Image 1: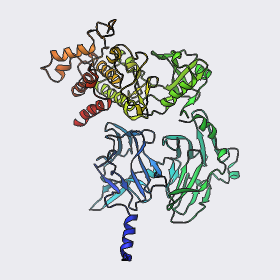
Image 2: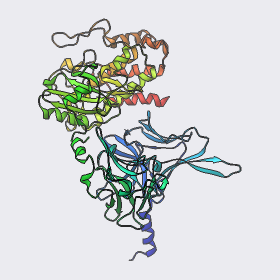
Image 3: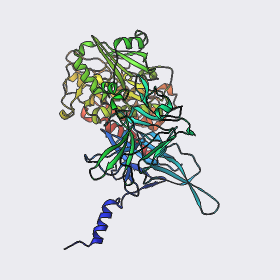
Length: 620
């Protein structure tokens, strides 16, 4: 029996059109959740989708992509809001606020991106994904009578990342920036932009060198068939759906397959070449229909990029470079069991923390050291210190990190400066997120093994970053994280879990214990050992001594019938002079005491710690 032709047409149309359950707009007060895979905006024609896109282990960016999958099952990203600051796979949301702003929150706690459109006298705010792939935030202002005037508050077309779509203008205020690699969507080193001479150019802007390479820098404008005043002093470029590109500096070209009916994109590629692509929908493949440079080997920095890049992902320094940067290692800013840290200024002007490893016997061979560095370089989280490079030269082993303005938590707690209760709570949350990433979310199980205030660094906004995580034991994810063995005791006395002394299997719970001690120190302003040093008997069993944990428990027991600030006044750091957020301090004490239970099975995991802390914030 033949299927009626009209039914065939209906079925075909249904297969081409987006599902009836999809949405193309989001109204004021609504949000999209990272945890709901169906929370996706789809353009009315179904060509584009917008939502949370996975960019790594528990790392997501809010992005726009072509809905159609390619032959390998992947999607083509055309825009990202937070390419350099991915958010957590839990509790993160994109929200259209009632004040007219559009924000992206990480784990319900931190705003990592905003459209910056809040505090305007508007009504009927809504976010919509257009057929062009443009994500637009609209609002209306009331006029006399019942009519309303809709205005564009913000649009993604004004803030491109590495891709330009048809009818999206590249202006003097925007630029295309390549991704770091095909699998790393963060900002790379190649840029397509208008320079101050009104010319459209390609730039390599690397960690050390920066240079223009297209058009050939030795050519005068007319020799490169450009004119800075072809359209006055305007600076913008655009191409249409047929593949016709025009720029105000006189650059003009047509796609090799010029004509309508083809999806196109202009992308600043990871190899430094700018290309116009056309989509073969049947094959699910993009084909190049124009490129800026016919000979890719002439792209500046290609060989250098391959040499430096994220095999290791960061730069190799010479010993003399770091010696010069640190002024012969003269400005010491910290030290620990693994090395001494010096402040330095790199050749490109960046202020860095340069760590000279002193236990060089632990890093016998260059290959072993490089394997460990590769693992460290693959870890990426906003609450982990970022490594910029290393030095392996003769017996010298050095690491180069980002410099943190406010130094370590230990320095801040012991200084005359006072952290308020809100800052202490935020530091506890951020530190927990960094450790949870190491334990549960990165490609390798990483135990820190030396969590203490000296290894928690604070940036200019007092946001914490865990340091020294790369010099601890690395565990293969396939092997689990509960049966590791260590050749020696690791950590710092006062923060060490009982397992180290009782010769028990070492698990991630040793970091949980240390974290609990750090939180108690933040709350009380007291070091882990009060009056007596924590000691160990000759047979390896822990001695009963009066330390910080016992002191806090005693004070809580003494004031058990009191509530609120009365029960905390004898515990909280005297520097706060009785002015603190009672609820925040109560939850910090409760979480910390759970973390320092002697029975490791009674301690929560770091992800559970985050849940307890964030639940407190959400309940409020």
